[in-house]
Amino acid sequence: MNNRLDSITIVGGGTAGWLIALFLVTTLNRGDNKSNVKVTVIESPKIPTIGVGEATVTGMYRFLKQMNIDEAEFIRRSDATFKCSGRFVGWNLDKNGNPITFVNPFNTGGMVSGIESAYHFHKYGREAGARSYADNTLPTEAVVENARGPRLMDSKDYEAVIPYTYHLNAGTFSQFLRDIAIERGVEHIQDDMLDVELDEQGFVSALQLEQGGRYPVKFVFDCTGFRSLILQKALGEPFIPYDKHLLVDRAVPIMIPHQNPLKIKPCTNSTALSAGWAWRVPLFHRAGTGYVFSSKFVSDDQAIDEMLAHLGDEAPKDFEPRVIPMRVGRVRRPWVKNCIAAGLSAGFVEPLEATAIYTIEMTARWFLTYFPDKEINASFVNRFNEIMDRQYKDILNFIVMNYYTSNRTDPFWLAARNEIEVPDRLRENLELWKHTLPSAMDTDDTFLFQHWDYLYILLGKGYFKGRHFPSESVLSRRDWKRHSRRVAEAKAQLLARLPNHYELLLNIRDGGSTRPEVAHLQRSAPQGSARPASSQGMR
Ligand SMILES: Cc1cc2nc3c(=O)[nH]c(=O)nc-3n(C[C@H](O)[C@H](O)[C@H](O)COP(=O)(O)OP(=O)(O)OC[C@H]3O[C@@H](n4cnc5c(N)ncnc54)[C@H](O)[C@@H]3O)c2cc1C
Image (cartoon, rainbow, N blue to C red; front, side):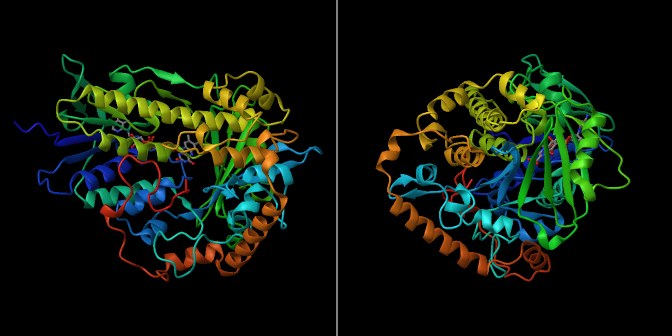
């Protein structure tokens, strides 16, 4: 008997629904097996997508490449810009109360004479004119601050000189994914799901559609956004709120024009405000900005006023505020019976590190790793849920760390330090890091955040100042100076070659760069790996 799962239904047509659909139709219908898996997306014509979500992490470049997507076409259709780092402003203040600015690049600062460069930086400080640890060890900060693109004018698709990912327009990006998915065979039904029918074992057997009536399903992805209509509502899977760890619960997005496109930095800016932080995500035609805040500390009106003041001259004159409530937390198990929740219906750990689209991608990848037969193997479900659990913890630890290690004294920031519950692993690590710097053994490289991410943030904040680490006794200042000089030389040479970020984008959009054959699927990273095969050390 053919036990192969041959049909998958996705409910929801936001970034989650279409990204999963494209991934499944592309990966499941290749190879020797000729019996294709039918992939269907059911999308409400009435309920809009959330319409925010514009920054990504480096997995996005690998995803597009593996999906055989023309990068220039993606950049044009999604209004994309490059992102080489996160850039943090004012999360900590210096001894004079001035905001500290630092970046978190997508790469390790590396070793000096076999010892983590961070120890040298901590002991000897900045060298060769560098402005920070990141700047002392990598070219990324200089590229960002000088508004350079991460590759040369004649680089090929996906060829990075500096590791990068993208900023993208959430609305046009999901339409782009939709168009390719449909072209590759995904069936698209525009209808509203009214009800979910369960069989006697509690599996989803059919969906009740407003126009189409009863629609039988074999396996279903719940991509219905914060509503989580199938996993949470119909199957009753509990939601675990993160409000004891994270205080922000609302966001107000504001779009603004670029004042000078030639100055678009290839980074996401996150600026601390009184009760949260403001994002600034540059797209090609405009910038997306917004304030993520805690309603316990400011009202919507106060948040809007504070955000407009933060934007200053750039604040729009006529502006219809839209405040988005954020349900921060995650479902206990994203895979239950024959349903997986992906995107906002599975969880959302606030936008600080732009991890939501990445989590959607990993949901698709790990589903493929544990691709079930019609009879769903319980050990697949358990392992998948365990991995997702570890992934959420990885993200939560990192995001909480950003708030918990701030030295700001506004009531919100004091509460983020003194009134929240620090997740266990983060607490253990922060205790350990009183005596040693973060190392690869302290984080799990199956997941997104690496020890170097902690190093960039914590060194950037000045968190380790005044501490002495026993392992520093073996360091050599001469080695550090020599290393720093080499980095500075390489950086200067690179800056002389890399084009302006905006001009690079113009060139790509105009088809000016060399357009090679895009990579073949079989050359891509192994399924299940969270890291790009071709870019060791990149996040
Ligand atoms: C303020 C904010 C900032 C964010 N920033 C980032 C970021 O920088 N980076 C990042 O990665 N992520 C970010 N995110 C998260 C990101 O927006 C989402 O993860 C992403 O857009 C996926 O959303 P979704 O597809 O799960 O849900 P949605 O976009 O809400 O889509 C839900 C879909 O379900 C459909 N639907 C609902 N009910 C029914 C029904 N009854 N029948 C049929 N269809 C139905 C809707 O029509 C819609 O198509 C941010 C989120 C917020 C709130």
